[in-house]
Length: 239
Image (cartoon, rainbow, N blue to C red; front, top):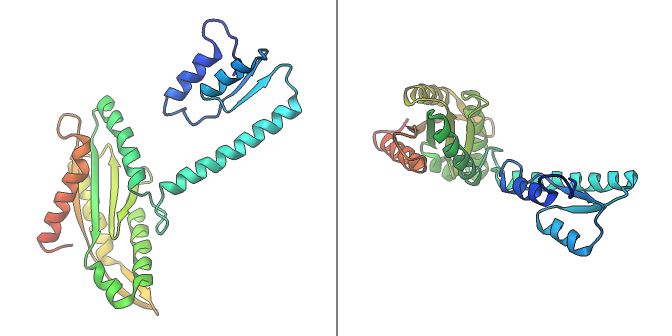
């Protein structure tokens, strides 16, 4: 990004880029004919990661850009790991909270539905108690796979703690979400889960469903409503 430009200088362009959350993590390198320390300091303080003065030496610039791209890949990888459940490979609660902020804004613009399925493996404690935590971990990974088999690639799946999972369904009404939830429930019930030593066992899941539009319920209430519905499902006999 050049600093000296007609109309709007590079500092202002960089500031606007950094204010846009879709672009904020894009590395910016300033290039300029200015060669004063205060100009370089201003460029770096505005969010740029490097500052190159003219005349530009292409070979040096290529190495600098390559180094910054490699660091960017490492930062992205670390950020992804911080939002991923290590056991199942699904998103974690932090990723869901981040997505929910984005979905809330999208919902206000589009007016479309946003639905949530909150799932809990029934009597999961007995798996850990009778077969040990390694068997419980195997069940959790298999459960995540079963969820992926019955949801769309555009849906967001997450493990939000223990044996509790959540599916975020975009542009899906309550009626449609209930159909998906029943399909998932049947798929879990008809499956058998490997516990170890070639022993397999059927399991069931309880599911709470909630759906919102901007005119009905605040998006921030979505998880709480789904959690209430899940509690109701479990209190009425599970599965």
